[in-house]
Length: 184
Ligand SMILES: Nc1nc2c(ncn2[C@@H]2O[C@H](COP(=O)(O)OP(=O)(O)OP(=O)(O)O)[C@@H](O)[C@H]2O)c(=O)[nH]1
Ligand SMILES: [Mg+2]
Image (tube, rainbow, N blue to C red; front, side):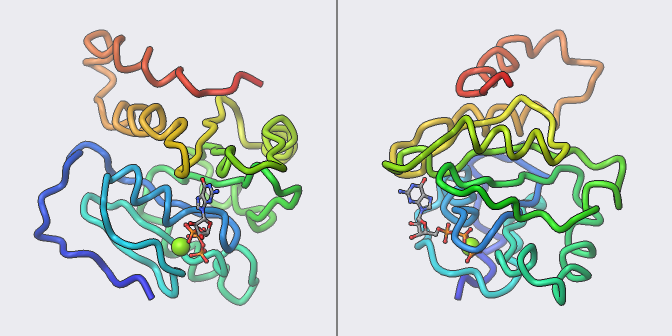
């Protein structure tokens, strides 16, 4: 079981904040969370919600696959601005509970294709599945096995913490964030 990490541990990326990862069991949420945070913690099956510093939240896949947990999922994401949804590159199943995207209309949902390194990966289908379920592009293609797309996703998530007023100063960051995105 992955326990909550030491909240006193100094965050490498203090502006990497305020997002929750959701997706099917085994879709790669914990591996991606740890890669984004550059944490050396072991990837273990997530049994309960894991709160990392700066409101970075990893959820168990059962939250999306079992209706009995939908209430827990909704209350977990209530206070978090951004939902990072993982669609494994080798899966045709869409795991977000029906209607979830409409419960909180102001929530930002970012689509990530995970496990792009797998031999049976079909990133185009994964992107289409997200588009068909009202998740808007751009989509981030990632693999924690090769590291593909992790830095681009991290830059994008950090850029979301930048107040609009200073956006002009962050064009370089925004440009970096387009690397690895899949226009669809
Ligand atoms: N090849 C490959 N394997 C991955 C990748 N990401 C995760 N895995 C593996 O897939 C398995 C599940 O990864 P997790 O990160 O635990 O998945 P999860 O979504 O957190 O799963 P739950 O906690 O059960 O909801 C582990 O064996 C990981 O090592 C990836 O990008 N490529
Ligand atoms: Mg997990």
